[in-house]
Image (cartoon, rainbow, N blue to C red; front, side, top):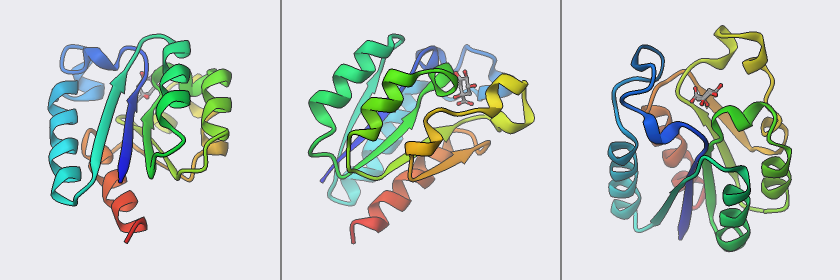
Length: 143
Ligand code: DQA
């Protein structure tokens, strides 16, 4: 069972980037914790980060078709990334949209997600553990 973990622009800077909002856990630490949990459940986790929307679309086109689940934090592309949204919409795997911060408590432009209508569900505001919760849900969906 293959699960994709996808991170959009600027998420490679976690730990240094506005830690008061996004926390001090780094992206490699998140990916490692997620991989450990997935492997304990007999699943394979494929993690990918890019600052470029097209690279995220390329990754989804290459790896999305046989994925059992997709966890994605699209970063700012959440709010305007229509080609990313279309790439997600073309896939049949369940999709969980994750945000570290509670985007609904922040600036108005963050209140709209173009990804949410094609996602199965969303987790926002629970910090990096939101990813683990998304993974637990996906693992439970498969059993
Ligand atoms: C974010 C929220 C977005 O608005 C922002 O552009 C990000 C991170 C979050 O995880 O809270 O890059 O997706």
